[in-house]
Amino acid sequence: MNKHQVKTETVEETTAIGQKLASLLQTGDVITLEGDLGAGKTTFTKGLAKGLGVERTVSSPTFTIIKEYEGRLPFYHIDAYRLEHSEEDIGLEEYIHGNGVTVIEWAQFIEEFLPEERINIRINYINENKRELEFTSTSGYFELVLNELLS
View 1 (cartoon, helix red, strand yellow):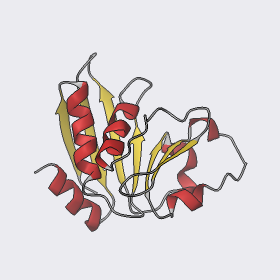
View 2 (spheres, helix red, strand yellow; view 1 turned 180 degrees about the vertical axis):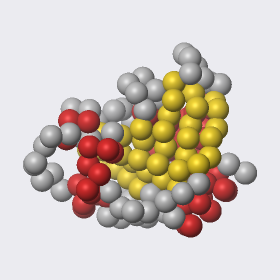
View 3 (cartoon, one colour; view 1 turned 90 degrees about the vertical axis):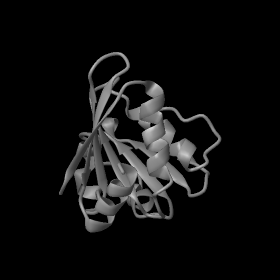
View 4 (cartoon, one colour; view 1 turned 30 degrees about the vertical axis):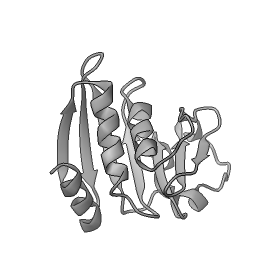
């Protein structure tokens, strides 16, 4: 697992990295996002959605847990925060192993459902506009994706 770090100076830069990553993703790809509240996870996700051609407004699915969007590929946005101690089966596997791109916020709460191959992204809040994005790939395929993204 290799780590790559990128610093962004503006919300637009954070969104643009998400948009560029989306252009490299394929059916079945999974991305996990970590970071404190307000770190920029939803901002990054909006960039992914834009890059996948999603036209609807993207917002955090905190209360619905899963939001589905149509674009170049189906886009599934999962917020696992409220699943920390849940035993309820809500069909996560159908999304995570489905026919689209899945992004999961607070993925540590559903570790048992996550595929081994994925991109993990930690977003660190530096100040109001600046963020540090730390990308970790878990496979050769995703390492190639990250190399293309960050070249």
